[in-house]
View (cartoon, rainbow, N blue to C red):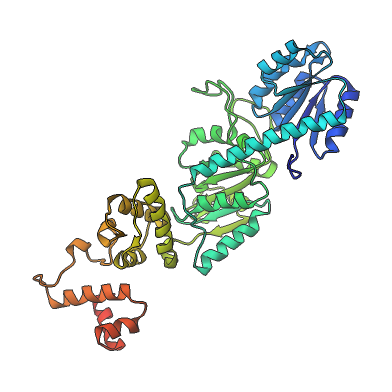
Length: 454
């Protein structure tokens, strides 16, 4: 049965006013949104302006043929399911309609029950198509463990606020250093929202050349520029009813920002090479790893656009500010890469865990992921050890693990003492515990830490 919360946008094309009124009444009583027109020209104008899930087209439109409307309508809106209405039903007409791209046909006279059955059928198809789009998006991110489960109170507050904001239609700006999980949070917000059954379109502003970003967002028509060999609907049209996620919006070219601002305010846009104004129903989420306020003061980002997208701001802290999450995340990544690389690690050795915790993680979660992947691929044994981690991950800021002194090396006693204290502090949970193991009082240990800069 069709999801009761789902409504269809339906276009009715019939030259008989009574048929248009009857269909409109029947469909709107089922909570669908209906626009009715009497001729192909008006039908194409409507399709260029907004997205339709379904179109009911009479095969006889005065002196014109509804059959000839199928191809141009699908060219402009390929996801629209076309149902041909005819009083001249025949196998020949049905085959020809299907050949041109129609999804079904219905014969006059029809009853409200037949129309309900038809819309339920089309609704289920559109619902399945949306679910497939969502599943495809999920498959792209299936290799990302749940990084939104945190033991840090600050991160937990961010996630809770994100869940609260998800149910609204407000624009959300996600801030954070590169690799902190902004795109993961954006997809989660879409999944928590009322638009979860619709697609999410992700556009990475730095990844698309500035001269092509407008086409990527708004689409273009064939011949709009060199290389435009066919129509492109654009990412906005592709996520109709869903969410548009603009990643690293701070890198968007100034020339495109006014068009984005207009779309955010009015939900209207034009494709490149086409003067037709179109409407879209999408929710906007943006993300940035730069200080947008500073970009505004530098003249690199429009102030009015900044205030428009800065309705609800969520700031993800860098990984070094919630070290309690490092080992749980590393274990999740380990399980993932063990599965994909046919390994059987049981965990990390204590020294390796401590090295992960003490590392600065300038690349945040992305760097952690890469480090664990490398360790799983190159490591051996039952546990990932310190030697399996990348060389830049070390407890010793003054040098790498390979250059750290060992007992018996021709080095000063102080170097051995420093190394031992560093390792012990990394393995113990408190200064008191470390001092007890060393057999000295805490004041002495504090002095040693000050000497060695620990």
